[in-house]
Length: 429
Image (cartoon, rainbow, N blue to C red; front, side):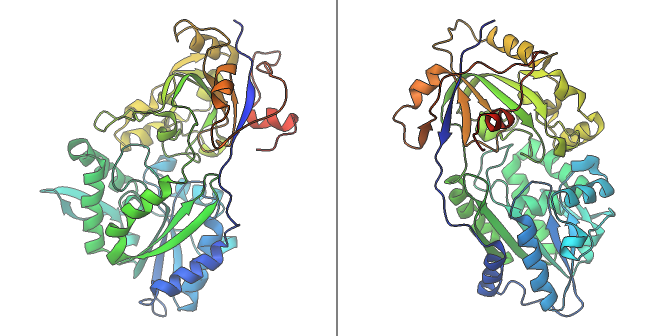
């Protein structure tokens, strides 16, 4: 099959001045007095998630230093639901892999898990956390505010989710998702978060907002009494800086990799327009006929959550799947659809061939195809002639000079990653 030639386009994102995460944390702690209740010798739990948030080491270092100045004894709680198969040692390892090490921060990472029930919600549904959470003198939530991969609501991924899934750990996350089947994600998270705020020693949180390039835009310390009111406002602000595909309709989307370090659902579902959740509203845009997945991020450590969102997948990605870890994550999230293995083809060429055979009638000139590294890095895209033409004159898009090129298959009918290919062409992404 002859695939369309491709050209390069670049999304021009607003570039702010480099943000000083350490200074921002200091300023926000002083503005809000978030640490005022901390006394000498008190243990202060800080949530540490599994996402690759670039500014997190600096944010944590500044927060830890400020707690120590108050005489507190900070420690990190791996706060990631069932990621790492729910194993506490594996979760501590994931925290270290995000750059939050004992050597960098000089604080311990909690490596145990003793589940305790802290109450019930909605007429008797049990809610859980870790014994270390209950025993902490103070709790500080740290998370990025962004759209959630599983639902659309007034609050999505942020401090409240970190409260319920993070502090809840494996069993708490499972409890929340089970309740969500009956009453929706948003209502489940809100109900359990309220119960946690009523019962636990939560001082508040540090909310991180990123720009289109996933760099720190700004952050805000939010005292506990303000979290439920402030988070919906922060979510709306974050949407202004959420990078998305510049097209509302595609025939074929080729994606180099998925991973838990990229998004909680492997793919950012709001980027690909597929949530695939039987009890939540589906995205309206973009509309993508076929998604082809080439690989899985090494940093995902075999967790293939979200692989089921693709239509076709190359064998190399399936060979990396740790089914125990993936199944645990998807069962905990009550989302078995995300663990389904799509039609698997031996090579990238074969996977693309299958996709193009299932999009109806097309020509190389009119088919709408895009190639991206992953759903987190969307500055540079390789696109077909029809999308190049559609890009002309659009605000925020720049067409790259140079001739169109064929998909760079090697002798075994596989492709390099788009980043590697563009690097060879002298384009840095």
